[in-house]
Length: 239
Image 1: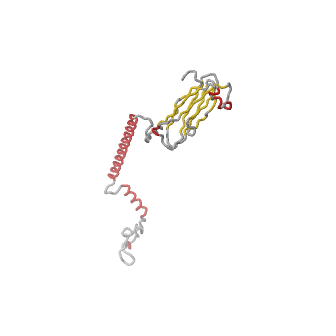
Image 2 (image 1 turned 120 degrees about the horizontal axis):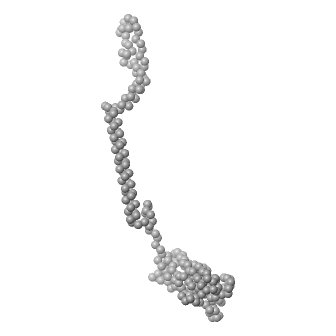
Image 3 (image 1 turned 30 degrees about the vertical axis):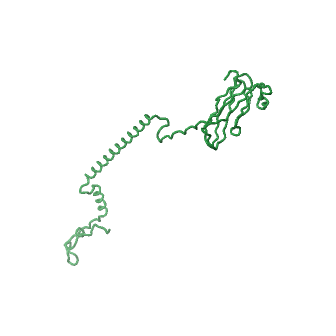
């Protein structure tokens, strides 16, 4: 790139990450290092394949202009991923304060005596970027193998400690069951005996007093009298 160029362009090769049936774009930057207003026009050998925005314009002194080049979706893979398409940048000094509406095709005509600078651009196809590798659940993206190993060891340690705690709790519960079992003799718990005694005491009827006198031993018909204590059914209600 010589120092007397009106516009410098970056990059000088259009690289498209080629994919079938997909529109692909890349950008160019035009830099005006001069003190002049510079008009530009971009041409291509395959205008039906590419869309350039803007394809004409004016770059102010000591300023830049960004250009987007879009390749239409392609239905076939190019042989050997080679591309023979080319672009041509034409630039010319224009009058101060010029705008887009002041640009005419005649300005870029060398035969009319205009000093037009030319810069050729090549086109290259490159492989599309690879998708990022999946990140396993619970791991951090970009973590080193050493960090992953530490995380695994920490997790296993937590699981071991949890298992030890559960084992201790089960042993305590087992000892508690053994303690209660030793208090219940004959297989009947002590609290069960107290509960049965309370139920029976609530259901029992009060004893009737024994009549006084000589006839306490016999009934009206001369048969022996049966006291309330002797009755096998006294004190028990029908179930």
